Image (cartoon, rainbow, N blue to C red):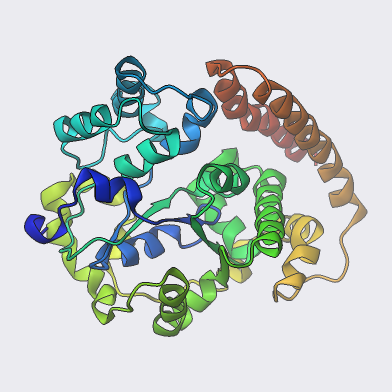
Length: 364
């Protein structure tokens, strides 16, 4: 990275315009982040959702003295806590001494949002950079919580990307996310879509909606429209990102490359669009169409089934009740002061749901 050209002053870091990539996991977010990382004017860190991870603890803090800033710095750089969930920035390439110095320099004259912006702007990319004019954030866990980001960053812009709910489902199942509970996976796709379309309707100047299929089928056209929305120049060289594999390995271990999708070191391809047709079972497809078909049609995805069996409808109903109950309890817990128990409850939810879903499948 050209440190001389890309180095920012603290004042520049705290004022950089911010944008968020909002999409469900396995929906092309890592590809999109990599395209932005290759852009010479953009800094966008690896996935690490510390902003919302510590939102309930810090967003109401009014006085950021040195003690509070050091507490925040310790939280976001703790290498032991929640390591497997990447909830902090301990895996990033950052000059941590300089970051601590920058954060402390803001004592008594800053906000939680500003501190988060400075943290993201301190990320060191292995791609060459010119003058940085935009800072981004990509974390799929943000997708059902964009309203909090909007409150925290009222001037930010949001790139809302969605993927066909059936391809999303088969990819999530293959990756083993949320314990392979089909109804919960689909429920989260629908929840995210509805929330962000509603926010777009209220704030059309802040949200840009597009599909993953558009990005891989017409990458130049789609990325040009994104650049226009973000008010940054379009750069052709972003599509040579896959040639930087060796540069990646200078910064990270080979196992990190696997973690952050080794296939990203290949040119963009649309060959995986429609994979669900070969990979989903009829029951999985029924669940997908039952829960997401109507929402999918509204944004241009055609349904693949006209009828859903009564057996599948009855199986899914208890899961829907469970989802309603966990949302209700989660909303109540968020009304209380920040506690680790909230995070543990949210993480435990899918495990409990899996026990029910496995039992239903065994009895089928």
